Image 1 (cartoon, one colour):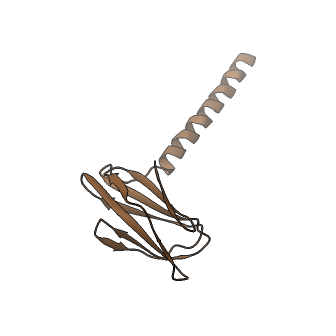
Image 2: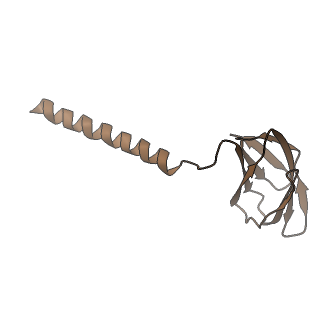
Image 3: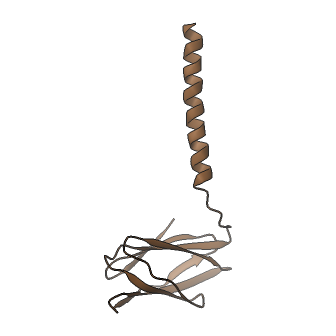
Length: 122
């Protein structure tokens, strides 16, 4: 009796852990093909961004990003690519990033601070 009760408890714990891991994987799965590049622009500047321009993949102007928010872009590119971000703030000031090198499948976060843009590859 005690042995079967212990087996039931172990089974319930193991089932709960497997269910949690499976649901976490399914709910956080990103449907971006490997050939595409994901660039996330995260605003931690303390100011609102009025426009982000990406130069190097054509010229792509984007929508505003409020402070402590982020916006994700999916780009299709073949081979080696580079781009530069130009961020314009609501007060009219702007900052420009260094060149960002990427290839298809890269996942990059561009963190916009008050006076610089930092890139982190995932």
